[in-house]
Image 1 (spheres, rainbow, N blue to C red):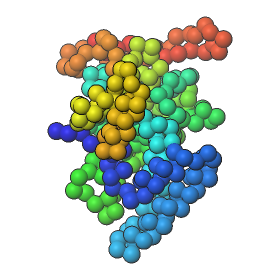
Image 2 (image 1 turned 90 degrees about the vertical axis):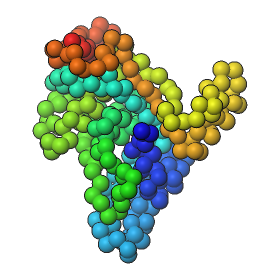
Image 3 (image 1 turned 120 degrees about the horizontal axis):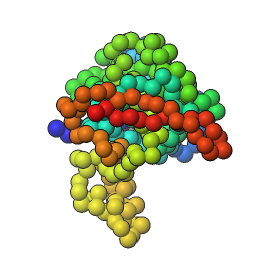
Image 4 (image 1 turned 60 degrees about the horizontal axis):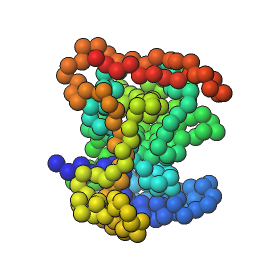
Length: 278
């Protein structure tokens, strides 16, 4: 079964998605483009409300989604995909008491895919020592649904680092706990030196064009292939994997956990070390 990521479903269903992506990618001043993007969403939803009266009640939700998608586009359209074995290992690992003191993220804004649980737009706010998360459910804008008429499942929250994780977990509804735990675990595992992020394309992308986009000796060929894939709607993916992680969780007898280790560099402090489930 072909996987369609939430970022692709968002781009395919929202009539303003292309324009929002262009605005955020081209603008110099982030605040100005946010205002323009928010105004665009309001205009489109007010038009839609003439047919779908409930559309006007969706303005705040759709503005949050538009901003998250715009930031995703502005910072390179990076999508991190937790491979199944790694995700299952994280699900069998107790959350650390606190977020890492230092984050190691693939971009200041990116989409983190957590398999059948859904995913999250992640936006780093280094001046505030925080990450803004916008969680979306696995069935977000699924085929056959009417996103204007149906209730779209998303959740926005701010997580401080190295803040305690009990606080955000306590504030969200139980149905979000599994996805939030996986996302927070994913952010923690990105700090691990053994984590590999292998850049590639989604599995459904045509092999010949992927080969062109990966041409070892010709920059023009790589640019041409990449452009063709993006124009066709295929998503570039950073696959997150780690040596030593079991392919299946069936054999786990003990939960994994996180421990802190002092850091001896100029910044000092501590870092998280992942003890994998066994």
